[in-house]
Length: 313
Ligand code: TA6
View (cartoon, helix red, strand yellow):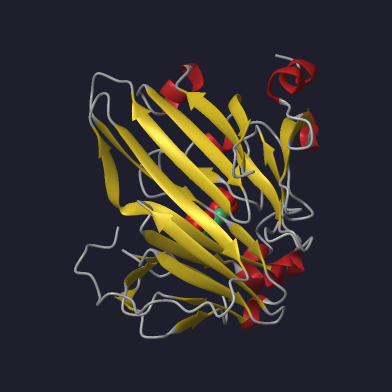
């Protein structure tokens, strides 16, 4: 389908526009009555921008980000499936983020929320790396909040398992002053040195490279961009593990698609299903969802549950 045909079929005046995006790849522009806007590339079903009604883009997108089929976009919300990182035999972070998705549906609901649904199903390329039949859907709902829902239906005759994540990159004024609340008491594993432990801090701060998976977080956590005075509430269902990642100065020099100093402007807080892979029987569907709410007045996070006795990875 050409971009003009996509626009004719899925465009909604004032709410959804399909146009050529970066890298020449079709992208959807969503506008909500509040003034909030979002952009979604068909490359990876990747949300590349989410501006709240005040015009602030809450997502980080590197100025060196590349939009190349098969590659990953540095920033926004990469969709990770069917494997997180190098935690298994498949390509790092799976294939969904580099695949070309299709638009399935667009809608404006009576509550004015704007929804787009993108789909991806197995094909020769996916079966070459992961030999199963599946149907993925990514639903992006823009209202006062941004809600991203990933689902996977097992269309195979075999059961299979996978891990998945929304690898969200948030824009912060200064990563060194940012903090993540709601992780106290959780077991973690550090991907850097494989250290395991229990988080003791009310607010996790970033003082250097951090690449850590927290297991079984509460439904809500909060990212505080203290330098800018912004907060972001992250509420998930079925994506209970939280990865906090910042490459910091040295590691970011190894990332060709990120400027050397940009690590100070970003923090990944990723909602994941990784510690216990999702097991799907034929015909079953898994649904994981994450809702982002900016600047909720007086945002406080509930006390975390006591450290879970769950194997970390
Ligand atoms: O989620 C954290 C992580 O797994 C890090 O280890 C880091 O490599 C990051 O993802 C980005 O991976 P990428 O393949 O996009 O460069």
